[in-house]
Length: 361
Image 1 (cartoon, helix red, strand yellow):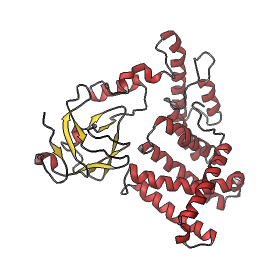
Image 2: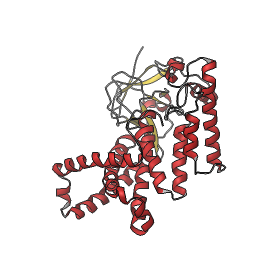
Image 3: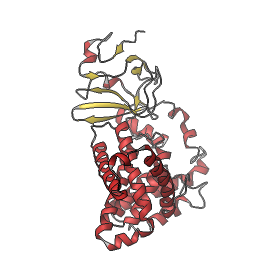
Image 4: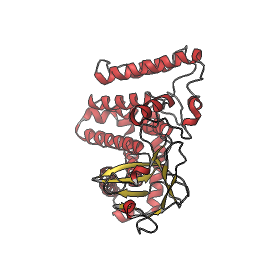
């Protein structure tokens, strides 16, 4: 079967497919490897992680409709005004099909199948879904007798999530209640921290703590999300969710830094880790800038905010060390700062009672 090539030069491809498409890489259309998916969009050359695969203007185009779903996708999409941009989340091998996820791929096998059936009228048979219960072996056994108490744990966690969301659950004691539910003695093993709905519970808890100005607790939860939950839930560092969560952590650190300058109570709360927070905050912003550029592109607002943060902090730290920005950017200074960052990161995580890398709470 023919596999017409698609690229920005327009060679070997009908104009209907090229209209409004910008492709830095050669793509081709062929029969999808996803069962019952029809045709799909493939790459003729290897594409590294964090690259723009193509952009479509308008957002809905013939080419865009050829991107099939996978619960283990190699790309993600975002909107830039009227344009649809597809970027690689991880390396896409030569002749590999480009896939994105139409739903939240971190849900359980049963939840994903239900969501796809309800919204798109198909069931997924991707590599991840063909494993079925095997992908949940850390949670479910497939034995109804053994799995009943485990499902009860999940049900109780969703009840707690709903109560926290609607305000009927007080913030004080939520974490203790979460641990009690996850470690119920009749359950086969503790509920994994990266399994639904715990990640959603933690994120909601972090934002609630921020709303209540409980800065220490908010910081501890966001550190747990960024350093423990996200790497387990989203293995690819360039996953947009990981970038967004790192952004939330950076914003909180900046807010705490500002509050410490005007509120003696806040300053006292973080006195023991002030130096660690300062060093870690700088490197978090550098990482955010790099990851946002690769995951979302340099036109995205998260990248622009991160770039601004880094520029301001570069000037502040250079001034504090009594050197000009050129010296501050030297490789020797960067290496020294990186060594300090690693030790301060461990100090901050120890303060937050986080040991790397735990699998469960």
